[in-house]
Image 1 (cartoon, rainbow, N blue to C red):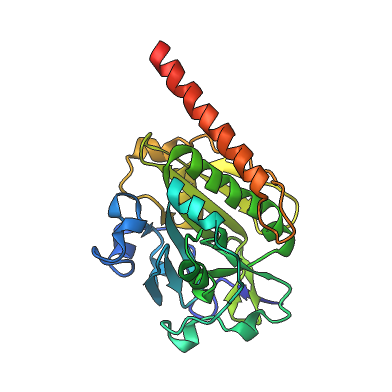
Image 2: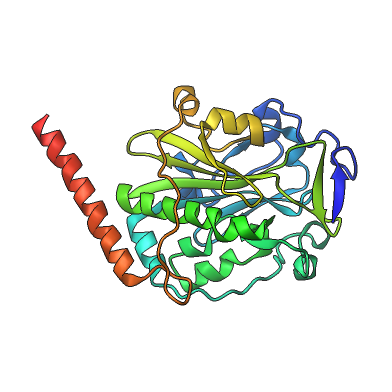
Length: 297
């Protein structure tokens, strides 16, 4: 495993934080590009101008990414999850179909051979389990949506975080989600000297009904450590303003996010139907109880 000092191969100052306006002028989505996937139609804004070099925004059916030719990974993936989209995703059989993204310059994109015997999982930012159709799921296996992820973390803690966010969408009806890598330290691992390995991963959530927002933050390693942080803290760590139109007061306060825990699975690695029905009933009772309390008080 090669390591990249953060001053080599055009990575000098890669993680120095500066004005968001400098970055926004150089990279990101146009005003008309898949706005339905972003909270208030506004794509995340890079607050680190060095991250904006060699970036390409890509819209897919159910998610959008900003891809970096420096790290050869996405810098984030954005999604809008609803009760209906999550229910539809539950009915889609998983069919792994990893593929290279031919919309990216060849020198700036990951290849299938890069991950061969790398020791890392090909970790989705926008999860296959979120995808409401076979087409959307197939798109999620683009390497433009993939980062090198610790195998144990990907298959345990991170899978539980993904499932917890889906259940939050079922409970609340609609949420916006932005997922991405954090690169920290004097040097970072690079798969075959090409693909930078995140030191941490985040999954940020915004509830447009309540105005609440917060983010899960977890190291890219085995062990199960995680914490919830505010968007302001995440901006400082990741160089990314994930929901730029939110007021600063909302960014300074982290919403309460559900504790991730493993759920029962069937033999295909999918949630069992009985478990799904139990959770739907539980969520419905919680909503009914909240409405009853509002009516009384």
